[in-house]
Image (cartoon, rainbow, N blue to C red; front, side, top):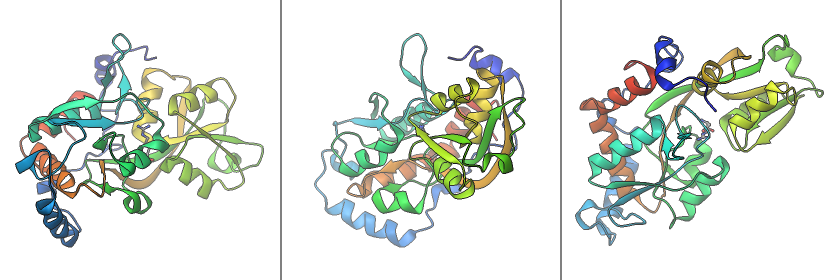
Length: 286
Ligand code: ARG
């Protein structure tokens, strides 16, 4: 898919400076301290396969992760090996390391199935998927402390001269990834347009490239990366400051795990692991 390597991409300079601000967790304090206190009580009472750790995992000794692996640079599959790779994959490895677990990635699934899978339990421990923390998702699952700040973007084919105004028209088709905050934004802000939910952002961008769709609405760091590495004939016409933050989804039945993830995220901030991952994928610790 990508025509230039990640390193070449990084040599392109600090593309993301100012557009992708990675959240400094500063000790990982949760806003909702009362809920955390309650979580602790439950965790202490629950019988766990991991004993002293205070939480259960679907496979003993492993942090089993799910995502939609078509969202570079956060997650994708290596072109040669098919293995998951990306910012979130490195985050998962470091999290697991900090928790004394092995990391275990399951095959990619549709983004809109991730929250239900975590909610239902039994298959995976966490969804790490560039997933925006939203109130709606927090009704279904717990979300960790934020680890990345992100925004939305509108992407068109260069030269088609579309604007947010011309796109808000019944004749115009806006491609989005199904179940994402991009879909929500498009539905709310381009109410006249026809919104087309697809299973991946890659499909959406390819469709804009071939003229099937008039625009894509998706997370800005992903559209910038994709335009730089693969879809050079597309352009971002609008950066939308939605102020989203990514978190890791954990089952509400596993409060001890949420707590352990938040502690590991805080440790990764303070020991430089997060900065190293940011440097690896975004050129510098932001
Ligand atoms: N941040 C957006 C959301 O939470 C999009 C995430 C898409 N992630 C993915 N791995 N495909 O809705």
